[in-house]
Length: 199
Image (cartoon, rainbow, N blue to C red; front, side, top):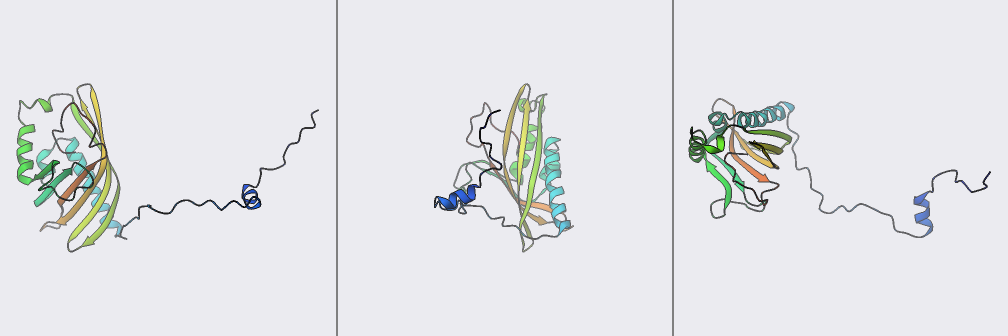
């Protein structure tokens, strides 16, 4: 039998650090994002979540008009090139569309000869991390995360990022979109063809 020493317990690394005079290890506390959320009623949280989920379902089902109707009359869909952008009037954007421009895009992709809508073109959205940031002056500001998979014939592309919604209520009390900002995580990536519809 070997007389090799077998320790009876794991070393006490905390005590060892004290013995050698090592400074205590702490995780850096700078740059940690703050939640910035509000304590919203559960009914409002659920209503907003269901609204965003329905918007995604409308896109995946190609119900273009119903999706456009989610916006109020002054609504804007905006996809900036970079997260640092703060406006779309004097800076290039991937999308910057009011309801009139949305209607024009709907007419183009709905045309019988629209090659981008050929068979074997589908999308699938997953929306998550829905968080209410503020409720003030009739507006509800919401942030969320999304992932979209796009299938075109035998090719699959992935798009991910964050949504920022500014929501208002119409005269009937239903939620409508005043502004939807879409920040793509992979907006700087190269693609064989441009986006044809909203993400």
